Image (cartoon, rainbow, N blue to C red; front, top):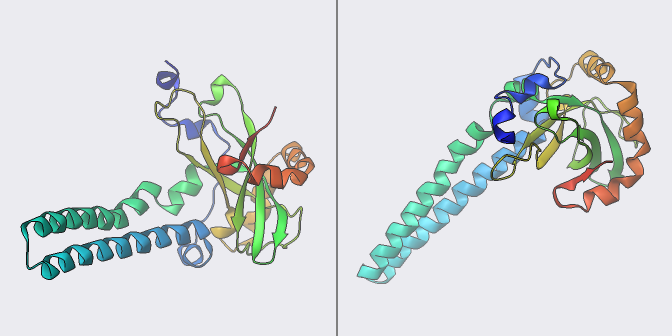
Length: 228
């Protein structure tokens, strides 16, 4: 089966780079980490609200038997929500590991908006590269890109954060891919220049030629457009 042929560490086949992750810089600039924090706060608030509703139902009904059932269900739901506060960052893993095991890919500013930019990256959807290559375009919205000029065509070396494969994982493709700029890991301009040079010029050019497809890609589910 295809799933059995997929190596246990497929990232070992990918183009990797060394990124000196600055923890203080990441906390300030990495928008992936900001998204995790928002999810944690949302889980905490939802859990607290549901638990409070269960307690209120008990009090307002004079501790009726059905209210106890509701309160227990609310408590279990709240525990599930609160457990996500720990589970989400563990599932994501450390930023150091994410940058170390995610493929280095070309990304460019494809669109400048009033409150940020749209990045477009050229990625490969294939998990096991020995089976071939499936290039694709993917976009993501960013609020800031420290160390980069905010203009269309600006080169933004990134890593491709992947996941969410099909339920059986047998089709050898990633369903979710999102570029994460190197600039969110470090403020060292020399690192950005080095990473940009490690990406073949042909890939940068192919991406540049497709920048005008930004709206087409952004409108697709997953913001992912397979290329021929």
